[in-house]
Figure 1 (cartoon, one colour):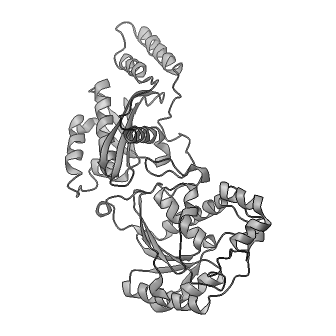
Figure 2: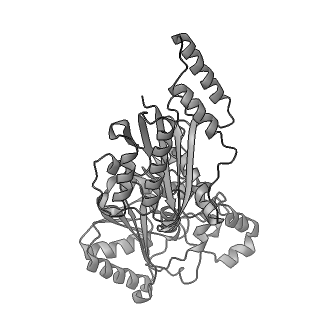
Figure 3: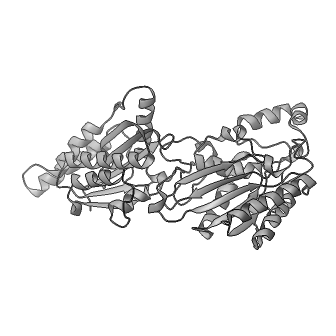
Length: 435
């Protein structure tokens, strides 16, 4: 069993952008915190911050006991695989950081393990605190921390007082009792740690309102693609116009299921030509609603592919608001509309679907499609709400971001999902050439 567990994380708000890291050293038996490290490092990438967190964590473990065996647990697949020697380090900025980390403790004393991001919350929190401190113009300071007490306890465990074995056991028991009585809540170090169901996004905790389970490793910030193989890429296409689109009427899955208008058919043909010229789409998947199936078929015909229908890509059911304009809803259902604007848990009048429910549905669909299409480029033909949800989750934006995006008819976006759980978003929302 390792003497210490080191959990480390790093994040960048912009990638590159204001960055920070967090590290924690844990007792593998009790899960107690033995040391914490966090620092704001200025403008850097996620990967640089992650490596800095690893270095700080290893140094903290060495300070406690330079001869200790250490298990490093991180949610960065990139760092874990590179430090384990299974992936080459191709990026020149990573090589000196990896070399520095490798010299802190002898290689034989350190092992690496990847964990899902939701099980790395302690280090994630420290990284966020460091970035918050940097935003205020300062550095992270341990506030009411028991790290010093826990570190002393760890040293007592590592070197129990001389005497009969019974005395040593009593001393260890006393130390563990002291740890258990400290004010810090124990942090489980093993795989049984309870998973947070929030939509975690790197080192930023925004977006937990929706309680969306992330993909295999969530949180979407861009990583170093060459080291992680080909990502699964979802090209997101909103359907072409219907008669309701120019009038800006609510048109969900509970309405009249309108067909494409003449303008919408022209848009579908134009975007089909654009995607055919790129030649990257390998699979076409559509919402079951007519406007999406017609748009998808136009593209599939140009690409020589078939259309697969996916129920999870349908639009939200807007209940009694179907076919109405925003102004009409505001006049007829003012209280329900305000509640809907205020909370993702609120549903449209008459049994519609809330954004929270839609997000859970779309996230589950995303995970299922990612598992089925690893390394492929897939066209998803859907609606305003599902496309916005996929983009929001990939960016780690808060729920209210759904009201801050404009998505034109027949517009394209793309999300590349990498092997370590990171994601990169590309937007193309100008459709003037499709008219």
